[in-house]
Length: 84
Image 1 (cartoon, rainbow, N blue to C red):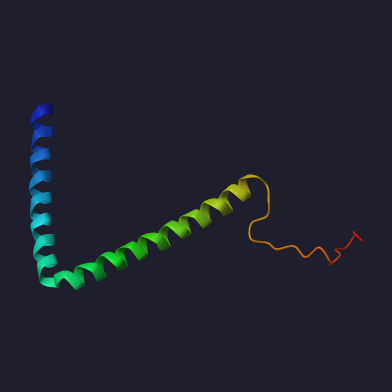
Image 2: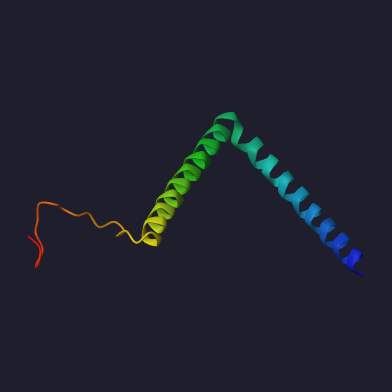
C-alpha cells in the first residue's frame, strides 16, 4: 500500500512538473530573446537582494548571540552618567 501511495505521488508530481514546464516554455516563446534576458536579469537582481538581506540578518543575529549590541553605534567622545 505504501508503494502505491509513493508511486501515485510521484506520478502526480511528474504530471504537474510537465504541465508547468510546458507553460514556462510557451511564456518564454512569447517573450522572445530580449524579454527572456530581461526576465533573467530581474530574477538575478532579486536573488542578489535577498541574499544581501539574509547575510545582514545573519550578521546581526551572530552579533546579538555574542552579546554585542546590534545596530547601536557608540560615540567614544561622549561621556555617560557615572563614567568620565
